[in-house]
Length: 205
Image (cartoon, rainbow, N blue to C red; front, side, top):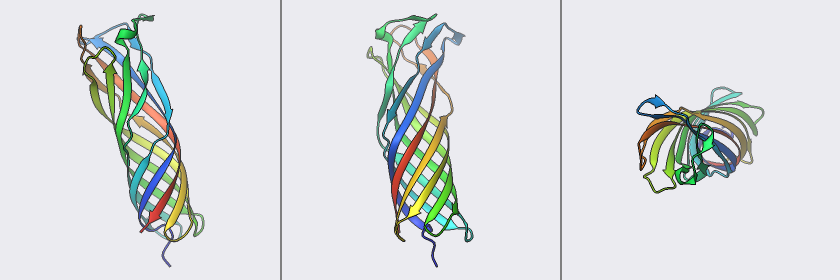
């Protein structure tokens, strides 16, 4: 008998996600400065669309692969600049936005019974993060890569339809870039991490 979880599936999920970003290690010509920036964070509802494949290793264990994208653009907030702890003024504020999020995951699972599957999720992640000065200076664009770790539960409504719930933690590698400025270019390092709690539906072919 074919397992309810084996085969190719299309998945759609949403829920609540929190991402936190910062612009750290500000330097001028390679020299450390007393400039700092406030971190920003936002709660938002992602829309994850994925295609996956799952196969049974035996009567209890499964192994899946999953590719997902979130096509939404999300503004995380506006970061303020300080010098030696003193605000520099709103004219040097920057907005932080993430977009182009995608991931590829390895998904080992354990069949609790024929309708229920518990699973882990190990992901390679990528996203774009934009730093845009409010004074009109050109945006600084960065591609950031990272990893995700998650745990979930899936229930088979039928041979074709499944529902699932999962939670994931995400951590991206810091990315340093040269930032354009109307006075003097400088460098900083973007940092990004977050987590989510999602519910979704899956159709298996």
